[in-house]
Length: 389
Image (cartoon, rainbow, N blue to C red; front, side):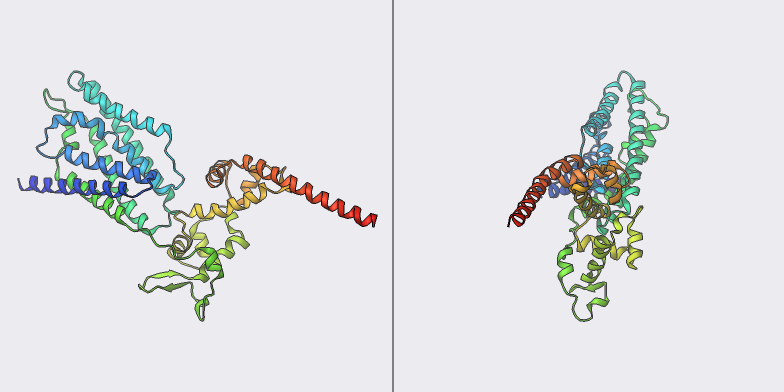
């Protein structure tokens, strides 16, 4: 009974933290994709710890399972949104969520009369969960290096790993052979969904991490690059790349931002193939964490690729609006600006301008031609006046 009481206490605290996170997230507007997904994930976590608590009739799992079965899809979408600033919800994402929930319904409805159908549904759902968990882990690893927000990197990676381990354990238990008993629910399902102390502890850890992430304040952005370029460093300041603020914490020095701007605007290092934050830090002779801080806190970027794309898109826009380059293919302009292929370039360009590169070029050249013709006419009129005089 002591372990059961501890289990119930942990679950009560976990549900309370999850619900508090939901309230905090939904109170602050505007709503974003990542905020709504985090709220949905927290609400699903609260529902899970309540539905699987000790003394809750296991028969209730069969009407809560369809609701809980969609949580791994929400977790996968959250992982995508957390580490990809250009992520957007698509219709097929909703279709995937409905598909998984539909499998949960088939397992629930088929269990009393067709236990083998329910077993097949549970295993199919578990396979989908495993695929989603692996996809979320791959997304985390792939975009880890480009994330510039130190606090977000630590908290979200920890919460994601706990969630993935939990899903793998849950799905793995359903993939194991299931012992069907007359009036009992599937033999391994209580072990996976039931009120174990280990499950309660894992969910409580996840809830604490979620709460820390929700209450974690975003870092201040004390300077923009234009201000940094114009601001003098003061006596002795030019020799340092970092200065300490009044709180003793290192802040970004203007000199470092000017050195970074020199690399980007004059040397155009963003064109280099395979440029990473490690390469750029080595070029500046800085530790990686200081460069991450400079780009994040000094310039306001959360993602290294977004920082690079700002310069790449600016160069591409100038080339697309240039009459002398109107015959140059868009792909050539994209590669010259530092993009590796046309797909990422098109997505980044449209996110920045609201238009495709072709649409932007058409509008820019249409506006440039009348101005060119007017200048030519003025030049000819001036020449005619000189000749007449």
